[in-house]
Length: 278
Image (cartoon, rainbow, N blue to C red; front, top):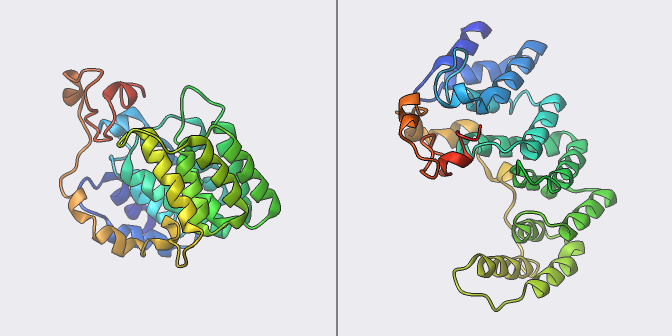
């Protein structure tokens, strides 16, 4: 196998996981070509032609394979693009790829200390956007790697902003055991209150705040996805069944899809908020 054939396999394989080609590229020395191809493929992952299976350059899962290769070839340019992706665009909720990019967020914070500030700053900017509403919660993973006083201050400011799932953000801070955030989380819990209808979103939020506060009294706290996940081969070995016959939706699939129907791409969102929107 050579580099060109490895690229071709990752771009064209429709079913199964191309372990050999991924590993081959992982073991190569990083060069400008590998870096540029990784970035280009991930950039195009949410392109309509790719999602619908009409792309001449890559299949539906190609971006995922390159995101796995990026574990060994992570550069600051790719990190900057991931920050931009999750903080400026309303991308489809493509679970497998987004999960892999979430892993790269953690890997970036460990490899590049400046990535923590980049992600925190990106969240702060994204909060101000109304439409499109980007999935900046994927960048919350960066709070597990806070080391400086300035980063702590940025987190405190985020707790004062109207960020999505602030209670989940609080749980992540508590999981890491940041005592400096405890009083702020307690204040948020008090303001949110406890008397909410069971099963409602407000009730769930109150539960998360209570859980966050309880974590400060416990040891052996859980860690972030990046630190908990096994090596990529083991992780995806357990997910092989998902790639046996999974295909992107075709134009025929979309012909009779109503705006409020589930999107055929499998995102779980309504068509009007997913592939139709893009």
